[in-house]
Length: 500
Image (cartoon, rainbow, N blue to C red; front, side, top):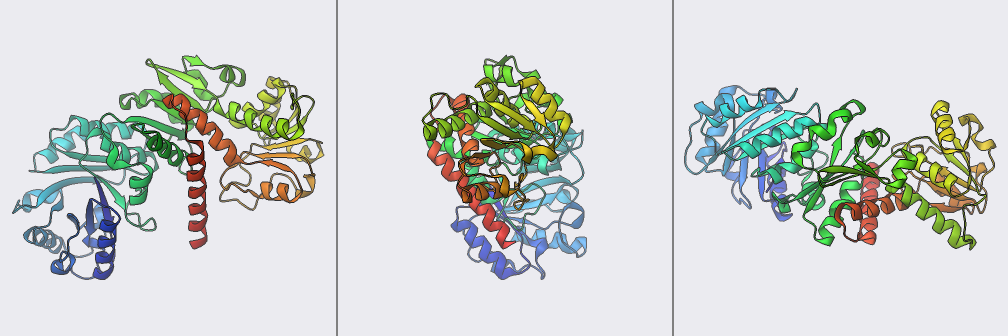
């Protein structure tokens, strides 16, 4: 069940959003009365109760906006109980002062906006002693393992427990709590009015993560990186799971370089079945696999981890996707059996995707030049792969038939940037931009305008995601649907930017 939190300053708007949330399929609505400018009129708020309601009136010290005296706040909560609301949220320190009455169920809550404390079990036992129908524990995650700690509370509790973390590191727990047995999770009604850091919207919970379909048998997959909030992977993989009928969910984990060293061990209790691996972990993840495919052994970087028989397999679907797309573009359009042989290729960048591209092209007989903004990295990659390198300042002095951008130049929000001057692009050149957000980067636009043959980052992203999906599930991926979902999300993102 998804509880949609509504926080408006006027009764009229709060009621309107309450009704609209119910119309859109909300199971439960939380009315945040601490946001109202005037004292709450319960008869008006509850006159046409379309779905059950949680009444919350949070003080400032726990993330709320109630500015009155404490006895006034507690009177509001008592009145809500007298009016027969479905649930009332009571902080632990006032739970004994507001007795149970009627059919109203008690959510006894603990919030910590600074950390996830070490004594979670003690806190949980204390809340359990306060006559709760539901225990709610919400803390700020400072590390990915904090997700595991709060989720384990749900699994072990004899009282229905909602437990999740706030912040970027805590997003997985907001979703996965449904698998571990939480009676419901919380979501924002309006993306412009999220009530806590890391809070997802009702649309995201319902249409992306399909929260109400999650159960104890749901398999877990994830994307790990830093940053990871911009990733389209949860959108395309979750849509594909639902289309194919696989009981699985795919969530984002923000993991820093330092945290990755112990990450797989930290999240072991979650029994995650596979990961998409992105910046900055593609190279360091190789050391954590028990089996590596040929591409990983050659490139020494991976973007996919799959759990099989208790061991981790490493795969590089970036490599396979890039080679498939380039081969199709060069071979199909030029009518050649060996389209890479003798081609002059300039690769911009020296990260994980660049490694896959450079090794693959050198192996296929292309003359590859690597150019990175960090000369040492470009030089090292070129040396390992058997390519040549030039400095970033010399990039437009290198003649090429194929230009491949593996840097983030041109990626949102820096959409007006381009890695080479437009004059460098010539008719007939193949231009491949691995940036997919936006799909039509400035490089791709300029290349098309000058008669170049282009491969977009979105094509690359979907192709590698299709290969990942097949590794995860052993099922054929719905490629057209995944592309449609990705384009829709990019379009929504562009619309949101234009509205802000």
